[in-house]
Each structure stands twice: as C-alpha cells, then as structure tokens.
Length: 440
Image 1 (cartoon, rainbow, N blue to C red):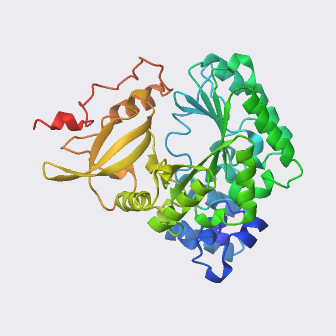
Image 2: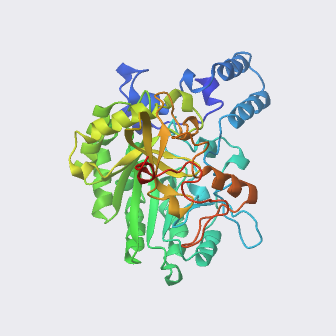
Image 3: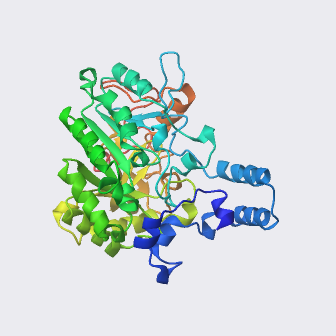
C-alpha cells in the first residue's frame, strides 16, 4: 500500500470506512477496491521500484523523484486536457483553471475545491491531488472565468469540478458562483457541480454546520433563473444504502436541485449487469436521473480497472434490459476521448464484417455530435486508440482534424457555421455513414 500510495493519491474518511466497506469481504469488497490502493494499480516494474525504495527507507526526495517519473508515464492529463482544452486570452496566454472542449460548456476548477473527502482509486483526475503544480488545474477566483464568459456568449453551461467543489465551505462556494449570476451573463443558463460528497460525506448537505447556508447558495442560483444540477458520482448501489446518503439526496432535491448520476464501469467494483441494474433502479427510486456509464479512461491505474469495450456493451445492455424507461436515460458505454464523447452504440455485421457502431454524443467539432461511424470489432480493445477503422479506411474521419488542431493550436470550440481547419470532407477519411455503404 505504501508503494502504490507514494505514486497515486490515497485518502479515505471515517464515513466511508464505517458505512460503506464490508470489512469481512476485504480485499475483494468493491468499496475497498474503490478507495484503497492495490498492488495491481502499478505496473510490475513500477511497483518493484517503489517497493524497493520504501523497504530501504529511501530519503523523501528519492521517493518523490521516482514517483514523479512514474506518474509522467501514466498519461496524467488525458484527452487533450493540457494541450487542446485550455482556453487562452487575447494575448494567447493560457487561462488557469478553465477548460473549454465543447462549444457550449466551460469547465471551471476552483482552487479551494481541488481535493475530495475520499479519493477514488480509478479517478482520471488523480493528477490534481499529487502535489505537482504543472499537472494541476486551479483558479484562485472567478474573475478570469467571468471575463472569458463575457467574450463567449455561445457558452450556455458552466461545470464546476475538481477534485470536489463540495469540500469547500459555503461562503467559498458562494464567492465562486455569485459572480456568474449577473445579468450580463444571462447566456449562461445552467450551472453544474460535479461531486462525490452525496456518497462519501452526505452530512455536507444535512447536519454540517453550514449545510443550511449551502442550500441557500443553491437557492440563490435558482433565483437567478438558472438551472442548478449536481452531477453525483455513484459507483456502486451500496453507496445509496445508508440513511444519511438518502437524506442528503432528498434534501438536495427538496431545494429544487436536479441530480444526475454518473460513474465509470470499473473492474473489481461494478463490472456486472446486475450491479448496474440495482444502481439504476435505486437512483430512479430516489428521484435522481441516471446519466452516464463511462469507460475507464486511459490514465492512472487504467490497467487494473479497464473493461473491454465489447464486455462494457454487454453489461450496459444487460442492465438496461432489466430496468424501466425512467432508468434508460443513462448513456453509455461512453469514452471521453480527445475527439469527444463517443458511445459504443452496438455491434453490427455489414458485408460480412463484424463491426462496432460508434456515435459521437459530443464532439470537439460540434458538427461531429450525433455522427455514427464504424470500427472493426475487437473483443480485447478497451479504448478508441486500440480500434481500427472499418471498410479498409486508414484513419477515422476526425483524425486529420485533430492533427491539424494540435499543429496549429486552433483547438477551441467552433461557433455555428465554422469548420475547424483540416476537417476534410465527410466520408473522405474513414467517417463512412451506413447509408453511404448501402449501395455497395
């Protein structure tokens, strides 16, 4: 545990240990796997290196240097977060604490919210918590965000993320949110807050000293005419069992806040259709909206948690087949990759070839949204970069555009009617539509 936690962040609170982990089932208990470091989270050579340093009582500086080197090989900022997502001001300087990947949504990282009550071992934002400033996103105040939003009236939604913004005291959260509620920013119609606190520290919404003040902050957002949503992370149905967790969810909903639930599909934790069926049913029962089943991202302890796309689709379909339409609002299995959010929509056979049908839910180029394309079926592939384009194409239709974006730095979300440089014509580079194949 010491060897792994020297590289990847580890933190757990008393609520999780006393209410969510079945200690009689350790180490196989899913919540234990979700929050405690496991040997398999590091590659064998990395583990042996760190374990050797720990056993020898190496100086702290040597441990830090080795850990930092290993982290750099774990793709700490995946999907273009550092090179493509960071917006720039009029002087071409990066704006700290912001990401703008999709045209309508800006992601905001308040510095006071860049921690969590407990760290998830699968977390794709693990690099926020390891104390390396160049890997971290954070904004000390909301001024730069407000200035950016003034210049971008196309933005309709702000996602406040972390870490977990709910680690902040209510006055701090208010200082970040209130500047967004002015009439000048009326084009921002929704504010979302990503959080695991409803699962890992539900007292935040019920009995904490400033819980009532927090709900007043929520009410202030709603009084401004904007929609406020909690994007709640529930990875396993057990997280919704404790009375405290249900009370927190009820109190948030009674304040008029919409709750949307999302989680990745994680080996050792929830890679089973029945677990997802139960999770979806409980969410609907408690008045929350199932939103996303994500594919484990290509970062951090990916090798320990990833599930092949073919298996992910089986689990997703198996769960959806056992729930009512109210729970089928969930979308997935979805990859949040460099090009956008891709959902594995099914497996089809065309002209004797077995293929994955893939669809963009969101695209770095807005015109990609909703587009269906195909990849050769591969039962072992776990990510888009392990798939081959269908029909003999050399590349997927978006690959050339991404290369141009990286080369030119012109990766900002495009306004309606604009085309990114290098997009190419539809169908010319592997983006083949089903109707384009029908006549063959």
